[in-house]
Length: 178
Image (cartoon, rainbow, N blue to C red; front, top):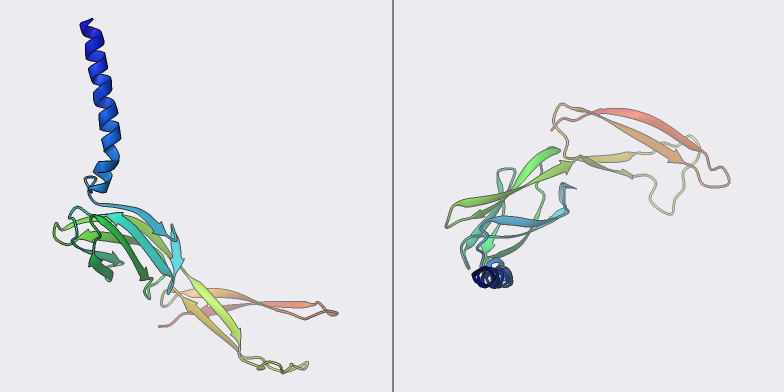
């Protein structure tokens, strides 16, 4: 009989603690945490990033650091943080997002990769003009996230419209100098 009473008492305590567990999350008792970063693992320079997490101090100042640069700061809503920042001008590579509780001086971290990206834009001719065989075309190539002194390769392909439907490709080496 004593074993049944002990078992029932233990079961009731377990159920009560399970029911009160979400309350602990709301009250921020889990401490510093980054539970969502969007985009999740990587992005390119100039891209918007959303960070959501919790800090240890209610309605308190927080900071978000990216690659040792302060990119966002505000006051938490309760213990909850929801902030946006833009990926700053950096070389491609692995970095850390840091959520900092300013008053307690504690951090939560999350890994993040910055990818090298590029855009190619033909400057000539301006629409609706057309090119003739033998005409020169100026291409404006923009790279972001590159490292100074590093060689990058671009495969440039020109595709002709139907009925020709021919394509010409050439790989060009570019040395990045900032």
